[in-house]
Image (cartoon, rainbow, N blue to C red):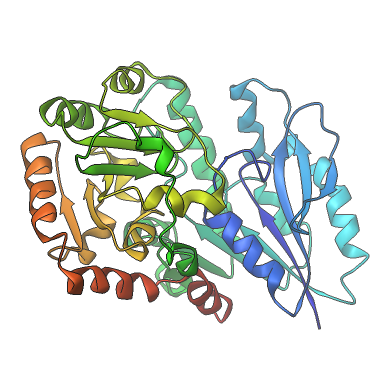
Length: 385
């Protein structure tokens, strides 16, 4: 029997300007021989009336309208009374198909918790990739504390109803287990983020980006640019190493923060903005050292960054700060894990990588490690649970 997969996502498919784990999961499910349909269920603008469309990749996007466009009104996604009726159209659509298909629910975002109770799903999976309730910048304002309580309540309901919970880090898995009685903790698994390995096996470069920037080493960050990044660390590093280039590739999710704007004023800092996913590797090939400069925070304890294995797949050594989930991959010339905000430690790690850069065996080790983390292998294992 073929399957229909409903995947609860954070936003419309193109809204993030990046391909996150949830996008890759949806595409993987869509490509499976036994899949009849994948429905990308997401919040939409308040003027949308449960709009349904087929995306260019064949996935069906089904939007559930928010109460309004104000950020505070987004909290309604986690409170059943505000959206239960809006979900009835989707449920009716699935009920008409349930005799012919196995129908599964995948939560990749802890919204719409009552959906788990509105239909007899064959399987419910919660793929947890973030500490969703925590503030990304550590702000403990009254609004953020309210957000924390509302999202925690919604997520706890989803965790309880899920047949399986998959987490991107051990830290997240432990947080989930704490919400469950001991007998039910066995349904929680850890599957770290992976890489589209084949995309990074070529040498094409976006050479125009740094064409007039000199010949110094290039340190690069690729991904969503958000308040969780340590801009102050990079600011000082760039000021101390004026002959080094610092490249940022990705959409600005900081709301044009002063820290990020100040950093961009330095002559040896370049920001490209968003680039098409198919061209990410072209920018990766400009980089000598991959950097993942995160601040020390509760939110960042839970993160397993998407870019670690992408850097390695491209043969690049990587430095990450305040990412405890990545510590077990620390290896000389491969990945350097740092704690704290010391600029001197960061620069020292960069210098050590530069010394080892030309070692062929080291580069091959980076690539071989990344090859074991291909997304297809990870999702295939998750499907078997």
